Length: 178
Image 1 (tube, rainbow, N blue to C red):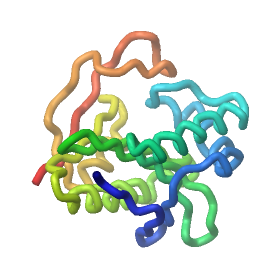
Image 2 (spheres, rainbow, N blue to C red):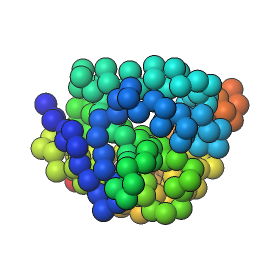
Image 3 (tube, rainbow, N blue to C red):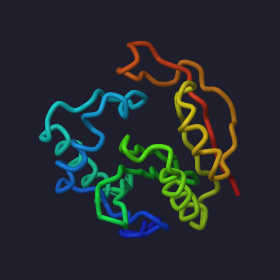
């Protein structure tokens, strides 16, 4: 069984388990933002309560050990920045991530993903860390490449992004292995 760190830091970020107490900050910084949620698998939240329900799910999956979602906060001022999540499946970890729009193009997501990949690859029995992103989400693809992940291919008609339509879209699959 893998035991994730409950709190860890990168150069500019502090990561801690996502919790319902983050609902207002998460709602204001990304869950309600249609541009941030464009490539996610859910629509923008319309209320803080909706975000609180999502974060309650985050607390539950952490306790179950089925996923490990961390909230990102800036070291500089403690403001909410986004989230990363690791889902452990036997010998692999797949990751998801999101960053508040005000922080785009500063290298923060690559920093968070890089820390998450480093942690996962140090775990005995984990041989693969991978992620997918929509073929049009170039910033996400670049963040994955920046941390050393390699494009393995295109997963045709893989994920419905409801903010972009009702049909499954193509996604790139990136991975790093040991």
